[in-house]
Image (cartoon, rainbow, N blue to C red; front, side, top):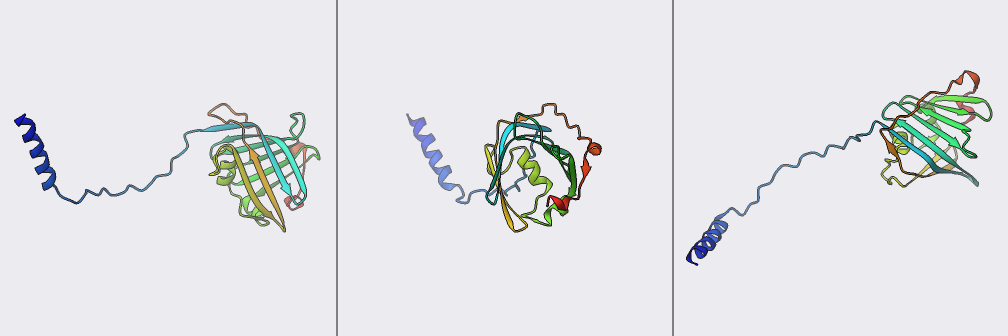
Length: 183
């Protein structure tokens, strides 16, 4: 019993004699976590674009190769691709399969009439369900000229690091139009 008393007294003395200041460790700057995936596919997501009184809803498939290329397939009916958007960090190509035409633009050309600016990072986050709003739903609002466009994407589960077919569509069978016709 005496031994237990000595241990208690010794502990109290050492604790009482200890410094009152706590050791402060310098905070390490937070390093943003780099996503580990290389490819991402989101199939059968549901996208709705609202512009003025018009509302366009469609299923979409988004395929992304990190920091390289994005392909968005718009399939409003029966799973047939009617519009395809191919994007790289420098260029966006939109292919209208119904009317047999396509247009290409840089992000700077698109952003002349679009507010807030669209850039590669935002597009990649949107197409891989990595927006700050979460991986279930995204809502983006843009001003296009003097009209407001709201884009709502309801995501389906994404698949990471799976093989993707990133064949760029041959545009030689489509008529090239000036991007200003769509913007």
